[in-house]
Length: 91
Image (cartoon, rainbow, N blue to C red; front, side, top):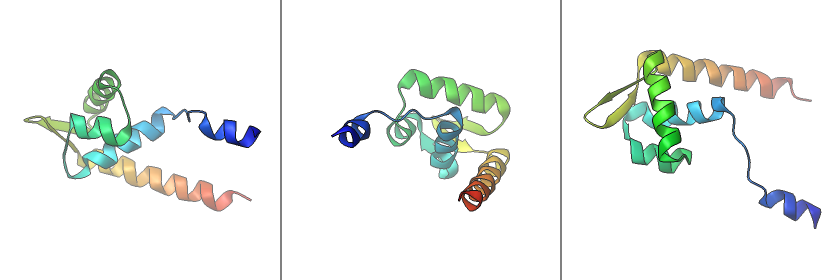
């Protein structure tokens, strides 16, 4: 029964996972509500992450639609490479 209880516990995500989720959802343009739903964030969380990502130049907003910038796409690609390397080194 212990395994079942562990399966019900919420999984904490790190900032990296949340940022990657936002940048990935916004690759082709997305509204804030779409990001909230797909990345599973509260409105306040989403607003804070969008502000931080916009300040870093990873995402831009035009008429309520958020889109990952070229700089943000490079971040996504670099993170995918790191993720693949980590998976390759697991025994």
